[in-house]
Amino acid sequence: MDGIVVDFHVHIFPPHVKADRSAYLARDLLFRSMYESPRARIATAEDLVASMDRAGVDISVAQGFAWTSQDLCRESNDYLLEAASRYPGRIVPFCTVQPAAGDAALRELERCVQGAPPARGLGEMRPELQGFGREDCGLWDDLARFCGQHGLILLMHASEPVGHGYPGKGGMKPTLIYQFLQRFPAWPTVLAHLGGGLPFYAAMPEVRAAMAQTYVDIAAWPLLYRPEIFAALAALGTMGRVLFGSDYPLQDQSLAVQRLREAPLAPEALAAVLGENAVRLLGLAHGG
Image (tube, rainbow, N blue to C red; front, side, top):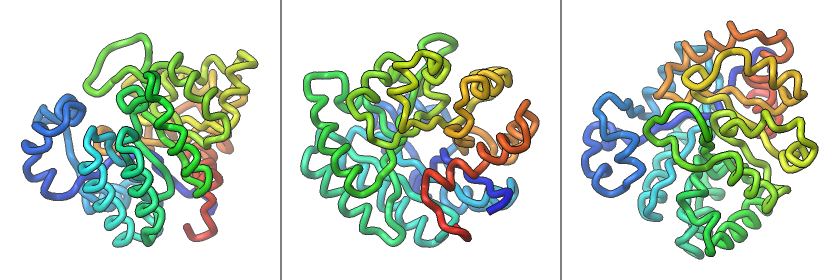
């Protein structure tokens, strides 16, 4: 597994969504906020695999989209599972559900873990838009229990409380993330986009304890941070829980790999972030 490259955070959609996104813009507010601009790129599984070949990426973890509708979640899951079956060992599917759907969400998760290959996680979820933090946050308890029983990893979007705005930034900020991790301390969780900055509080013992089962991905980091973040993460002793992510097609995978290789990382830390940490988290056998 020496030199393996795992992109833990990519997005793909069916060809018909790429060809004409207009129907989906009308059906989902979050999708509209992120993809209304024709400059917002949409990629298919074929686009992704071609990009992986150019960039030298061995495995990509394809994240679902946090649709408001459970029907749209199911449609997206169908495509992710089908893409993973066509590109076994190269595309690892994560699925999404709408927690407010209750038993229907659990049935959908059951279906996804029975796929060939099965879904390996739940993501990219948006807890602040999907019930957590409200009176109905108990909806997440059944999801956490199911994921624990089936070894599913959660990947959630995270938002910086400061800095510039951008489409889809959202409100899953460190305070709310911390509350989530305290509620579900045993759920293996990946916080996208460097966790909205929460890892930089890991010098606080209570935060470090809450993040005991938590990883962060670095998706889109050049759009948010300077390279000094890696020295800060290393000083906090958290490099074993940092995952490479490009957020493709938002970022070109080749450029994302290049920028990480140019970052101030020791060789062993670079290898860990590029793929070894993800291999361990996903429990991949030799050869994928």
